[in-house]
Length: 279
Image (cartoon, rainbow, N blue to C red; front, top):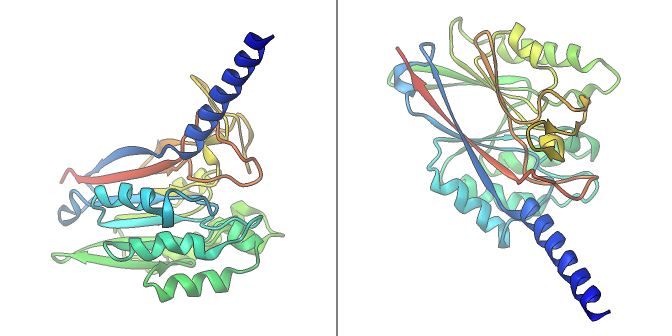
């Protein structure tokens, strides 16, 4: 009887450790994107992408997460939506992260569906802007180095216009964001949704940074993600770098959870992208 109880305790302990590590052990994934469209002045530019924090906490005042980002010495940080969670809204917790990031790099942000769902979009945007974050709402900023230019565009989550087709909304938002970009300008896009990959390809966006899919929540080794919003079972876009035409779409597995409290074989992810010019 004692052996059975010990085995049960051991089994529970192993499961608890497994779940704890899957939800708290940060993983960094690196990509190098090489193109002759990248201006020479931007060769080696390093971008850290964070997505889908959902009010999760990594160390006191996000200390573990901040240190992981800082070690990468990013030129830019992109936050691609769902910084907060609509089921346990705690903006101050998420701002603990942002307040530290802006002290050592430039931070760009777009909304996710949870910012819209909590009905606090204006409050969130204003709080971020007050910290110096570049909040992109269907618009573009041009950045220049040594006389050469690159564009950083960002679009709102399509839930902002909930009763309309997300594909149509994303297309129109992208049109607005890219309308003032000079032709042949290398463009980086922040957008929460990966399921509309075709729209990005059709618009010939160079690199798209997305999240939303949470890595499929449960990742089956050798197969991929199990389920994702907007894609259903065994979705196509839950992680990694997807390339078609001139477009690379990075899908970040995200950091936190929402309705489903556990990630399985799917550690919270920090994405690092380095641009390499082949001119």
